[in-house]
Image (cartoon, each protein chain N blue to C red):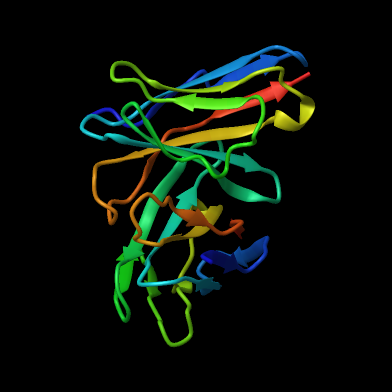
Length: 113
Length: 114
């Protein structure tokens, strides 16, 4: 079946530190991969996406590369800010008719100044 | 272009009452998804609808929960005879047709059952 596993949080960092949030997946076929971010009290916002192997998604200094050989889509940022504090969700779209996005459990990031 | 609109933002119900959660998708979006978020459990898929059709309801509890997306008007998630375990944040998302389209989420309805 299809599933997403991401590292458990919370992740606590100081401002300007390097961030990695691990995400691995299992899927049949050729899924698309996404990272969503949820700020307190809000819904999820699309952060970045990759639709095929070796694609790199990037946005707001965040990056993630679709690695088919390791079935991974790790989220990275070189220098985090306090405003990056949020919950980050890795998600998979199986790209099969009639199927919805499958989310990981979310990783809470807390950045202090 | 307004985003996905959910209402109410907060809903309090006593055990045994009915809860109705509404979702208006983005303009031009014909696909609606409902997810439930519980602490420590992440987002759980509940149901996927297109206008007047339920495409996938594999995540819906078999009893008390129902969803619809009529030809006119918002999508409705209905929970009958609520219990304390139904307390959660319920998120609606919409997308245009196409399997590669990303989802756009509303800000959620936080249901509290007392």
